[in-house]
Length: 381
Image (cartoon, helix red, strand yellow):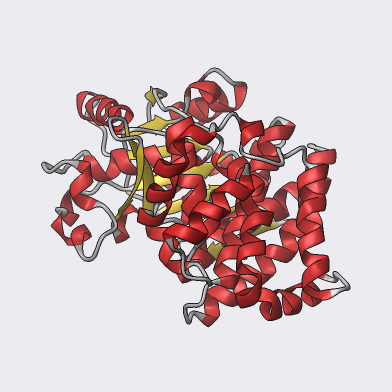
C-alpha cells in the first residue's frame, strides 16, 4: 500500500514518503521567500536536517537555521529565536522536528511581529484577539516524530522559565499554512522516542474520545486514530524501517491533535506540570500516568471505551482495553511510575495545584478536585 496523499484538513498537508523534497514548493504556497528553519539542538547536526537545508538552498531560499530549542521550550528560547528571525530579515518559518521544535517554530512566526509579551496571548478567553494578526508570519511545519501533532495545531506549549509552569499560547493564525508529513523522516527515531511520541498520539486520541464535550467530528477522528496507533505503534517500535507503520503513525499524530479540539483531560493535566517541573518527556509521561487516569475515570468512560475496544478488535470490553494499555506500556518500555521517571514526591502539593490549574483539567470526564487529583498523583508514584 502506497501512503501518499494531499489533504486540506485542518490545513494543507503534503503526506507521503520523500515529500520533504517539496519544501521549496511548500514555502512558495505559504509566500515565504526567506525562511528561518527552526529545529532542536539534537536534530541540528543530523543528516536529515542538513538535507532539508540543502533542499531550501537549492530552491533559492537560503539555509538559515535556529536550533536553541530545549526539550520543553521556554520564553528564553523564544526570545532568542525571535531575535534571530529579525536579525536575518526572514519572512517566515520552517518548523522542523518533534513537538518542541514545531511549537517553538510556530511561536517565532507568531511573535516576530508582536510588541506584547507572549504570556498576554495565553489560551484564556479571547486573549488571542490582543495579537496583531497582520503581523503574524506564515509557517511551514515538517514533523520528524509521530506524536504531538503540533504540525496541525493552532497553539504551542511554552514553559515559563521562572515559574516552571507550562502555558498554552493560542491564535488561529498559528496554524501552519502547509505541512509536509514525510514518514521517511521518522525512520531513524530511537526506540524510546518512537514509544513516547507514539503514546502521546494515543493519549490525544484517548482523551479526545473520552471528553464529555460535544464534537462528533473530533469523536470520529479520535476513534480511528486510536485504531491506527493500536495496530501500528508496536510495529514501528519493533522495526523502525517499517515505512507503512511509520506512515500510519504520522497520520495518527495529526489526527490526535485535530481531535483534541474536543478536549483533553487528566492525563495532560498531570503531565504538563510534571514535565515543567522535572523536565520529563511529555509523551512518555502521558503513557506512564495513563492507566491510573483510566482507573479514576472508569465510571464515566467504561461504556464508551467498551465501544472503542470493539472497534479496535479488542475482545472483553473496558477491562480488556485497560489491559491493552498496560501491554503497550510494557512492550514499549514505558516506566510504570513517576518515581521511575525521576519525579519526587516532595512536590506532590505543588503538582496537585498545578494540575488543577491546567486548562486541560476542565475536559476530564470525572471532575477533578483537590482530593481526587492528589490521590491520582499518589497512585502514579
